[in-house]
Length: 347
Picture 1: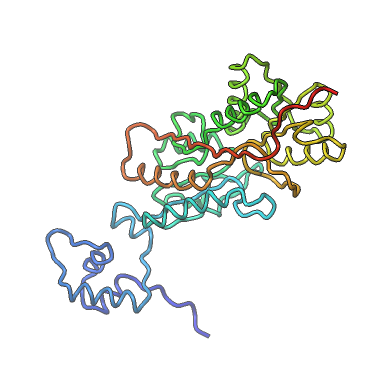
Picture 2 (picture 1 turned 90 degrees about the vertical axis):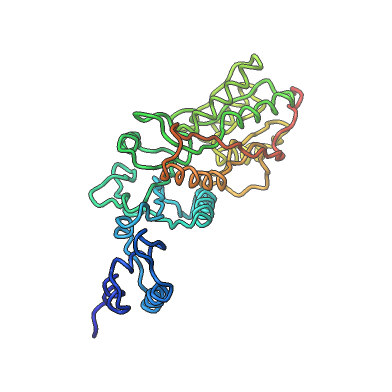
């Protein structure tokens, strides 16, 4: 039984082709050193040896030999391939992959991070963050201390999603939730609704706080009081009972799954959605939701575009970037849907 095959090195390629290791390195990096020109036949001989041996340059060694190794890290604070979340992260990853491919970069999915207190950690004894030129961060909630450390150390990174300052401005590509939510509320107002309620956390993660900001701004402009119904530890039945008892005619739901649950329960009770209760969804499902035939009015998150633009921002930072920290908000896509109608006349 033979042991594992030894990895081919630049020294091996040099011995096979009768050139110096420095010449092999110059060929690998696609350039001369400015003083010694490599003959075409020599270059081809080295390239032929590389192809026939299957030589793969060590990424750390390449980093020492060139300015960048063209590897972009992707770190997620939650699992990106769970079976039960409707593939929420998949479009982000598609956009990241497509842009990286266009730019000729490889992706390193940083999956070895340990879990502490229920959350993954970027920084640990065996972290491989430095193998990449920079890193894209994904997650509904990012660790504030780790963001502050990334900002302080000057490590190129970009967050997918708007983030508050963490010892300094955080580079990000986010969804414009305030504008999208305000637009949804204005549609409900134009349809004749004056009793609206926001169902959800409305605080905590920036994505939730931004939705609440848009909700309040639209109602303030209309001279109407914003009503907030927290959903934590409350059943769909309790929420629906509260909405009906207080005369709410349009529910603006932070989480798509809550909208589905309330709509199904309302229909089971003989109510018409949207005539008796309009329901507006602020984005795509982020947790498992029951199957429904309803096409919810609201908006979709530009997840693929956000992933693409995050890579563009990151590569700009790696190459020196602008003096100002890049912070971009991408417009959300309105969805007409079928869950908004003028409120029914009082019975």
